[in-house]
Length: 508
Image (tube, rainbow, N blue to C red; front, top):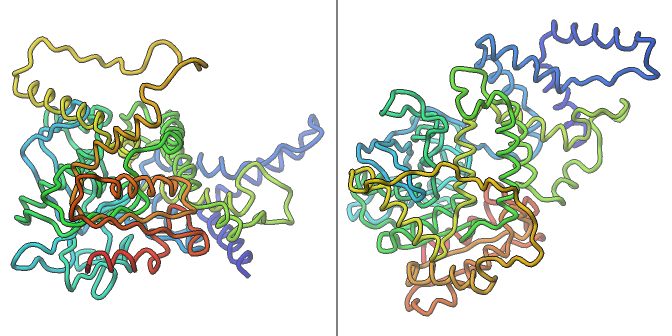
């Protein structure tokens, strides 16, 4: 029954091709089969035909038509427990800062905007604000609200009587700096030249993002100390970073499937996504606005990412080794059910999210590290950027050749700058004093391959061993494979299992 439903979705998805286009494909196939020169007919490639059609539509200015068609016919995504990622560009409020923000890697933004949405009411003491941090591609629309009644990406997690109870808390969620759902990012206009930033946008860090959020919290709501900083995935990074940057301004910290520093495996996975995206000729080194966007690169990047969001056992349970149509010969285009699922997920996403935002925000995730040496260097670079902005740093030349000229070679006798033990000690020094006496909840998921569960244990272990901690409560909660096999997306799908410890922690 489940397999039949998926087959139907696969058929429905392909109906977005026009009848005329099907006719042209049919003629092409007939001519191929009639070719007497080959021993066998050439394979057909409907997946490439779809991309060619989309290119044609986009070149004719039919971006909206293509996007609408894709969204309407991506029903296979509803065959499983798929969350809404909150692709919205309306219904939010905007905080505008006319002050420059100086960034960890030396750049700055002369001004910026942060999109946000709220639920519940701020109490008279102004001490019940909970800040929700998003993952890489999510908007501020975590929950439906009067200005946007569509379900949010954490719709059943936030609300009256829910795990984050809006009867008790005033909840704020933002689109991150660097994003494309209302906050300033690469697609925004640079006030210096009235053109889109594109890849003139400066490299960001996760800590830069939370410093922008803090300005919103203080200026827009006049809140000096928030009740809790809560986030999952990249949001878990932001949650810890907020506590690290402003330890006296947050009471509780919740990190779900996050980390204290990005691991080489996660960096490698995001690197492949960026390389695929940048290899799309339509990316044009980031200057593709008002042209055909790099939708093929984005589609493939999202497919790679989607693989990392789930677990092998879940793929087995949902799709097995079934093909979309066992009566047809195998094809090089999406053929197995799992392939059609990934194809649909990438197609649905490729025009919803700005490609440059994907590059910048994913790079910020790679750079995340709360180790002492990393944070000290970031502070120095930020101060240097501010001095240059004020004209107080003269005769300083920037070196934009950031990639080594000499190709990398594996060196069998080379040693890392820091041993494993020294690296862990650097992290401890960086985290323990800044997060001393904070109540911290860390939640890990055993089936998560993108943020492996040992990274959650590392956060908890470092904080539990904190010699500076006298009053803070450190709690660690782990979901085993007997509870959830959803992998990294568990925080979007296993709401009861994630929500119960969150609710208890907030109320204690």
